[in-house]
Length: 227
Image (cartoon, rainbow, N blue to C red; front, side):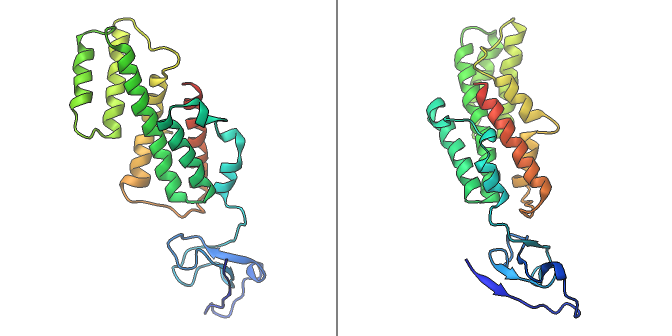
């Protein structure tokens, strides 16, 4: 832990509210992000981003510590591929690592989609019309299918089953998962593209980012509880 006392060329004006407050830069790419600084200005002298009070407990750690946001005993309840990713997500929150949390949250939703799609195809074998076999072959032969492709294949399976009057068992919440991926507000594919695919990352003090991650972790918990 490093403490600095820093003065900046700030036109002779002192921000009294920061005079005795430990600050840090809100830009996680800035050299002053990891320092505890007694700073005399609202803006970082290195990158120009906002200076914010140093919080001893990062908001991601608060998310990790909130038992209401997490499935209790997930390691024992779920297949290893699901349980492993879920544990990684909480570990990234505890670090705290904002970008790592975003990546791992995406991985959790993707693992759920792929796992439940494969389970649903296995269950539906012999219960659907000929289009089922065609879609199954499409799933198997598509090279490195994207998350959007997996979602499309899952929706095709659901539609095939509905056409012949079949529904997936309660413990295979594939339709609920596809709705989460396609939802205008939650939309995991669009959110992934915005946050990761296009290379756009926000400052970790962004209130909207905190709210989005909290909401998606809640949605993830709801999906896991429906399995």
